[in-house]
Length: 140
Image (cartoon, rainbow, N blue to C red; front, side):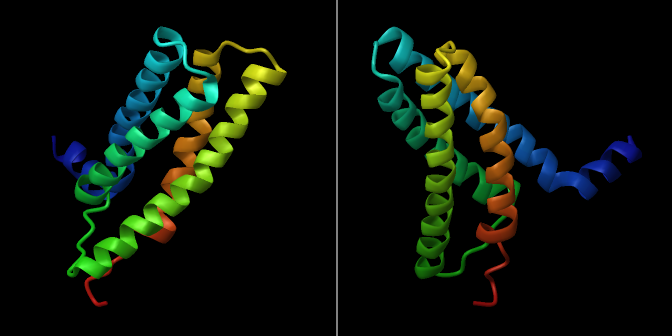
C-alpha cells in the first residue's frame, strides 16, 4: 500500500490527467456520436459542439484536480482560462483537420476516426497544460 501511495504522490499530475483526460475524451466522443450519428449533424458541426463541451469540462477538472492551479485574482483566472481555451483552439484545429481528412478524404468511419483523433489531441493538450497554462501563479 505504501508503494501505491508513493507512486501516486510522485506521478499524481500525470495519473490525474490520464483519469480526467479519459473522462474528457469520453465526453467528446459521446457528444460527437450523439450529434453526428443520432442527430445527423455534419462531422464539422458535431465535432465543434463536442470540442466546446469537452473543453469546458477539461478546464474545470484540470484546474481543480489535475494541476491544482491556484489563481489569486480574477485577472489571473481570466488569463489562465484564456490561455487554456487558446491552446485548446490550436488542438481543435488539429482535431478538425484529422476528422475532415479521416472522414472526407479517407472515407473512414466518423466514430473510429474520432477515437484515433483523441489520442493525438490528449497528448498535445497535456503538454500545453503542463508547460504553458497551469503554471504556479500565486506570486503574480
